[in-house]
Image 1 (tube, rainbow, N blue to C red):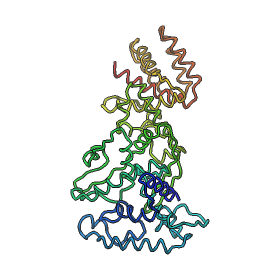
Image 2: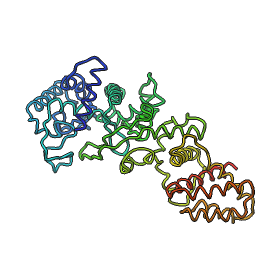
Image 3: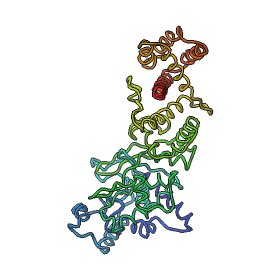
Image 4: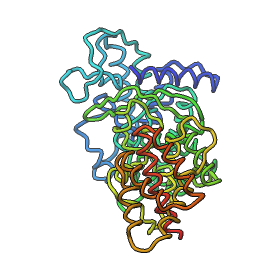
Amino acid sequence: MITTLVGKTFLQAYNQKYNQQYSAKDFFEKQYFELFFNHPKYLMTGGNSPFENPKISWEKMYKGIIPFESKERHAERLTKFIERVENTLSDDVDGSLAIGYPASEITATTSGLVSDLKFDTSQEDIYCSWIGAGLGLGVAGGFSLLINDAQIVLETYEGWKYYRQYLNDQTLDKLRGNQINSWNGQWLTYKLGNDYKEDFDFSVLSNEGIFNVEANAVEVNTVNWSNLFFSLSRLYPSKVLNAYIYSFGQTNKTIGFIPLYLKSGTRLKNVFKQLFHTDAAFDNKDFQSLFGMHIKRACEIGNIGMKALRPENLKKYMEDSKNLSFKKEEDNLIYQSYKTWLVAMLSKNKEQITDYTAELAKLIQRYRSGAKGNDRKNLIEKDLLGAKSKKSFLDALTVMVNDIEKPDLDTLKNLRDEVHLMTNEEFGYFNILLKFDYAFVEKQS
């Protein structure tokens, strides 16, 4: 199972980096258990394993209504778990013993990856499944990613101790446990991101939006997948990573293996820099969060790359005549994110990016200002920028050509020829970009 595979990758990388010779069981007992379960607050839920007791209300423990379990009770749970591992047949391992494996009853909501084939599961495999499950990267939308990459799992592991530190901090007694995957997603995004500082503390992470602090509760926010994606693209600017995307809980959900085309993140940053002559704004996490459709919709494409990074709210502007108003300060950032993505989609095979539509928008603005009344305004907004097909757009261009002056006439004729050669998809991207640029030029005039 994927949790076991990732756990093995981690253990090999860990032993090599720290010059150790841990077996999976040794690591589980000496490090994993100590960090995850040998404290009042767990780093993650123990599921149906001996580490959990469904009759105990952890909420009451958090509120101080009943006491937390003692160290002795934790040790008893560990002993019981080890005994189960040692006494379970290799072909009879289920999800209560190995994380991510099928439940003992295939009708259970926690069942997944069910097969009638018999697999021999070693004791080392079981321990590795727990290690691997602790390395999942939670993202907004209720899913997590497992990436079988040595550097990524080591970077993720480095964050475990900080989540434990904060859970044990008496001044943070309201901090919620069992959020290791959400923490991992936030930690890796921050650690690999542009704003990472080695001397960070809880207040720094709170200002980064990693924690949600309220009067009665503190918890880890889930990170936008696009923020994680852009951080990963800083680590691997042109790599393709395969991510297993899933959700383990009362109901297990599996999307499967989805390739992450990290060069798309690099491409967007390069396009932004060429358009706006800086990359400072692009490194801002709030700006990066403007990109990316819902994680489930993104996976339906079959890969997470440029198409999946389409800004979530862009679609509504492509489907109706609505345009950006630029009435709010954030509209400029939204415009920049839309423009960056659209230009990247229109210039997939071009290294040099030109701000072609911005120049066209200025031409159209000159055309409109050259006449009184609303005839040209209506032609531009309804027939040209509101065109749903290339034919309608070209018909509007034909009307404009009759009244245009040199040298703009040659530009429009070239535009006509270029639109003819566009695919319908390219035309859709081109026209919405032209519409945004026209609104921007109008606002500046």
